[in-house]
Amino acid sequence: MLKNIGGSLPVGNVQWLAASGDLSELPERYVRPEINAEPVLDHEEDGKLPVIDLSMLLHVHHSDEEMMKLGLACQEWGFFQLINHGVPEEVIERMKYEIQGFFQLPLEEKKVYAQQPGSIEGYGQAFVVSEEQKLDWGDMYFLATQPLFARNMELWPSNPLAFRAALDQYSLELKRVTGILMKSMAKSLGVEILADMFRDGLQSVRMNYYPPCPHASKVLGLSPHSDAVGLTLLLQVNQIQGLQIKKNGRWMPIKPLPGAFIVNIGDILEILSNGKYKSIEHRAVINPKNERMSIAAFHNPRFDVPIGPISELMGESEELYKTISSLDYMKLITSSKLEGKNILDQMKLKK
Picture 1 (cartoon, one colour):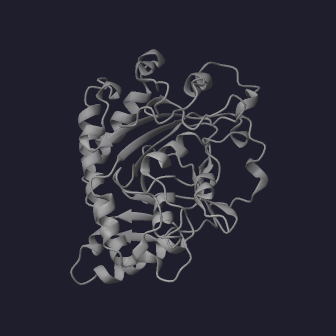
Picture 2 (cartoon, one colour; picture 1 turned 45 degrees about the horizontal axis):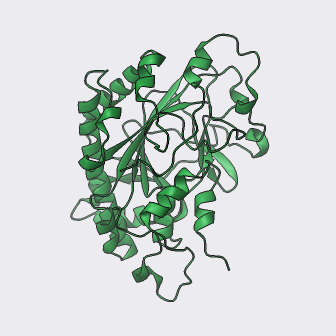
């Protein structure tokens, strides 16, 4: 399903580079002088993301109150932490274990699953569209997971042995959780059709590996961007933090709650809601001594759903975004580098 819609240019492996020896001087393409151009809140004054309790969204007496909290979080923050989500702890821990096992494999073994020309799936880096652009200090492994026919099993590793089963179970659990969230968001917005748009939609995962770097203040694990998808559920794989979100012009470090998912609104939901829900810029910073790993699960509408404002939401409001096919939207993503809200900017109607 994700073949021939565009891909990323091949670049060197960062995990290998970090482990190869002398890093007294960084390769120029990784040096990011713009990192410190905007202020960062320190951990003592970092803000707390809204917390949404999924069990309360399902509670017969508390769902309306929790749904109101969810709607406000989506409008004012674009990010929230999700607790009591019902994903069994053993499913989460097994997924974490298998991800760590994959990234510990020898480079030559991981290269078997390398991205191919014209595809975003596989092991490598994403959003590299020119030989001149700056590079992120990290490697990633991207796979389509749901629906089943979207999977390219040639790219699903047979080693670690339990990786496939772990990812299969994890993807099913997150599909369930996302379905509940989308129903609640649809109800909060007053457009039941929103939940139907995401039913049996495309789910994909990106497993991220960020090696330590002695020049951590000069590199970025993931460039500032808003997610071009519908909804993202992020799981921290190890204990090293690195996620920062942009709030009121400042970067805010995020500390995940134990057992929680960090959920964020993507550009597609901002477009479908005609700006009512907000996709927010975020980035990943690097630790000077320790590796960091995470897994992001992306959820999109079905491929037959056009990407544009939902007419039932418009009323007398001005339409803010154009409407294009899902295929054209995917091609727009793969032909763009990761930079701020550039996808959303390209979707805005010119005034």
